[in-house]
Image (cartoon, rainbow, N blue to C red):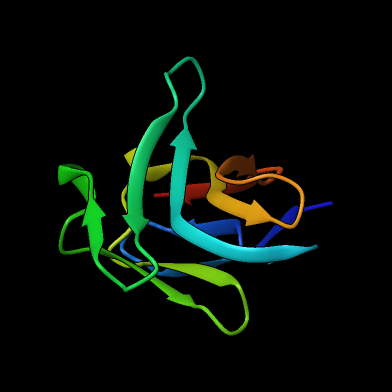
Length: 120
């Protein structure tokens, strides 16, 4: 059984920084792409950033230059460093990963979500 556990969410002042972490555990053989999504109240879930197993990253335009996604393949973790936070970054942030296990290949898994609140 695969589980994604997120940490690092909380309350932060506008202009400040926050680092989110997500750890995958279970009978994992490989993890291809790992991603961070976010969903603000009343809004559609949005892809924030993704990173391949080789470290190639992509970002939604609104966070380019402010957020950095990284991963540790040995630990099966993915982080999201968020700098220069804005009020509009307030959302529930979700970890997502394409994982192959001993029982099934290429399954999309989701974390439980962690709240990020940016205050002024």
